[in-house]
Image (tube, rainbow, N blue to C red; front, side, top):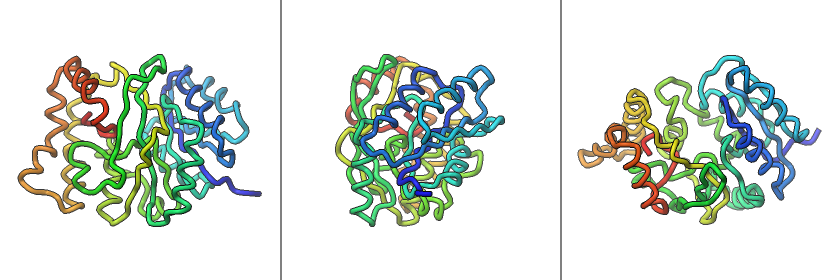
Length: 278
């Protein structure tokens, strides 16, 4: 049996039905057809189980997996990586939309640039109606200093070399990164000498709405401060001047929701996503 070239990792927990449908359809519409999807239900409530399974029946290349107990996105991604059969692993979130040529372009890049372990892209920002209202641009070849303000990769827009990612241990397995699995992963990979690349074009529509800026629990912001300190130390960039970036998540926690949203809208083309501190 021929193995798929790309395994799409889509882990969900109590997703919006319409948004999940759009996300899955954007994968089905890819110009690159040699893929499988691991649709991993991470302990969604019973009310969501039936429609997640229903959506998995849209295409025979989709593999539905349900864990009755809710763990975390990192846990679900690690389980999906182990089950996947593709040479490459492409991330997707349940509320985002990939452009039709995303897989083709990212696969072509990785096959011709063996020095990179993963490839991401810029993203368009969409509201709850799916309308584009902004964009995020990322550095082409991020270095350590690019991690100070935020993660320089849009996690749901990334494609990895799957076996190599597993060799690095996959996603963090402890509770301290349960809300910052992407930031922790990219800093750990950079600290170990691995590198990624961002294609300078929009290959994903990232859903960012007003509800995205609700105040997160302080304990999660403290967790991110710990992730930042550990990651910066791995990359050798811990200095007194860097401390302000370590405590950034706690400072952001204190900013009112409306002010935070206004800042993001004003600086929409210059700020990244993928960090809990946003």
